[in-house]
Length: 61
Image (cartoon, rainbow, N blue to C red; front, side, top):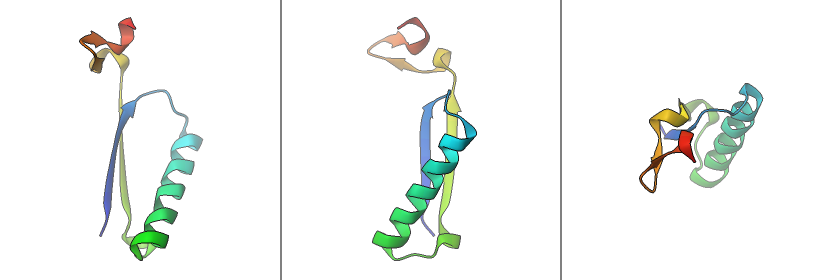
């Protein structure tokens, strides 16, 4: 049972997340030879105020 955990800054639409989930599932089915029903994908969206890069909050960049 593959589990893919995606962490990213919020802002993507539901449609973009749907496309991402479909593409990742297809890749796992093709490459890892698993069933689509076995693929689990968790998407965590974080506000820019909760993510820092190079010592600065993304909301300030």
